[in-house]
Image (cartoon, rainbow, N blue to C red; front, top):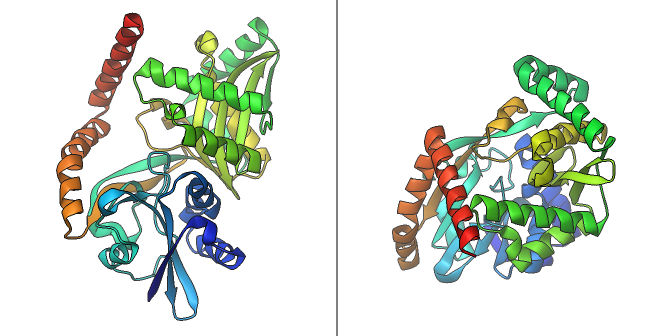
Length: 356
């Protein structure tokens, strides 16, 4: 097999068309984070974005999107933003992972949201987890019926709060796809405030991420949905759509309406909007948010780990990254530890706010 490394912008219409064909060989490859649009978008704003094009004879058989950092340290393309990673190839394709890294000029490739069933990287898994998915394949009525059966108290509470929001603030309405840049600016402001409030790093403090999100919004690859009560925007969600799959990405809400559970109300309305627009599932991303349990219809097994060759850069990277990775994994795998860590981060954020 032959491996050619190119920048995303160097892919032509034939390569993009072949990429889409390969996505059809495995249902999980339909996720927008594995679509050519995502790699092309990241490539506009990240210098290290690359695509390894794998050919077997006259035919392209795989695309491997990645980012190359100093000392040959590699990550998935858009690392830190992606909820699903992997190689775009038929399930039966046989490749050697280390040989692929060598062709890419990488000493190590880290992953944390890898499709766990991809045999190429299976020997390198350090931990396996799952990503919840909202199943809308049978339509919204069926989805809501299943939610009512699985979490009746949560469903009743949400519908009560929705009615209360309508009475106390204004008529509740939902815009599934807003093209208004002001709506996007508001969502990013809400999300930045949430990051600060919860002690997380603010992704929107990084200019390239802001530009990337705006690019996806302008091109239609990103879908911005807004929940309104009268003239008040209550919550919003920015996700990526690839065919019949929506990838949840940035949900946020106005804290003034927190007592109405605006995030959960937004997700319920998002499910209806997606079903009506022909979306069959919403991948919600990995995380310890318990509210996802009442929405999920199935799960995608994902893995984290690293493929490494015997290089100095890979060894140094292991020394720096391994202890942190183990500690983070322990927190993610234990709900009690996750809740405690979450409280500590929020407390630290409050203390920083008081100091300022």
